[in-house]
Length: 286
Image (cartoon, rainbow, N blue to C red; front, side, top):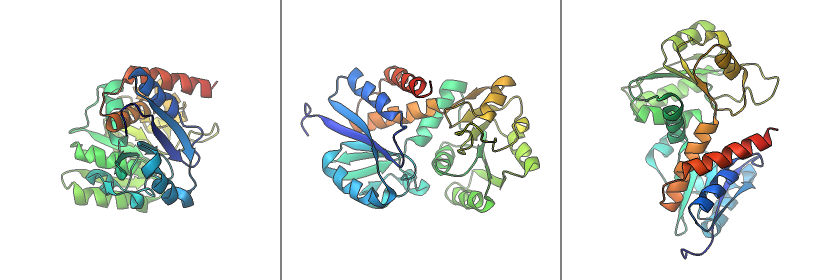
C-alpha cells in the first residue's frame, strides 16, 4: 500500500455496535495525520472465516472482541507465542496479505493498573473474579510478567481448574489456586492474600445484576479493578468504602493504543485517544 493511500481498520464482534473503539482509533489517526479509517463490523460466528479471507485484501488490521477472540485463530497465518498459549487474539496485523495475530489485552490491563494505582505485576498476588472471555489472556500475561500468585474464582470450578493447570504447566514458578464463587470463606482468603482483585464477569452490565461475590469480602487495603466500564455493585462498594478502584475504560484505552502502534509503527497519541474515548462513553451513557 502507498503511504498516501487510505488504510482501513475495524473491530469485529457479535454484537459490536456498542463498541467505543472507532471513536478512539479515528481520533488517533487524525492526531497523527494518518489517512486511516476504523469502523465496527458485526460478524456472526459462522462468518468469521469469510471475514478473515476478505480482510486479507481490504483491511490493514483489525481488532477482535467477544465472541471471536478464539474463533479467529484458525484463519490466521501466524499467532504470537503467548497469544497462542492463551488461545486469545484481539489484534490482527495484515502483513502484505498474511494475517498475524497477537493480544494486547494483558498489556492494556498492565498499563491501566500502573496508571491508576502505580501497580507492578512482578512479585505481587492477584485474584481474578470469573474465568470467562479475557481472563485467560490476562492470567497468562500476568504469569509472563512474573506475578507471584494467581487466584481464580469462578462459578464453574472445572473451568478455573483447567486454567490453573495450564498456567502451572507453562509457568511452574507461579502459584495458582482456584475456588467456586460461592465459596465465600476461600474467596475471602484469596482476597486477603492478594494486592489486587480484577472483576472479569459480565455481572454489572445490567442494572439489576447481583455482584459476583459479596462486596464485604473485599479488604480495605486491596486494589480493585473492574473490567466493566459502568458502576457495578462492586465498584460502588469500593468507592463508598474508600477502596482504591478503577473501571475498565483505562484497559480499553491502553490495549487500543498498543494495537494502534502495532498497525502503524508510530507511538500512540494516548491523550487524544483518551479524550475521544471518554467523550464517546459519556455520550453513550447519557
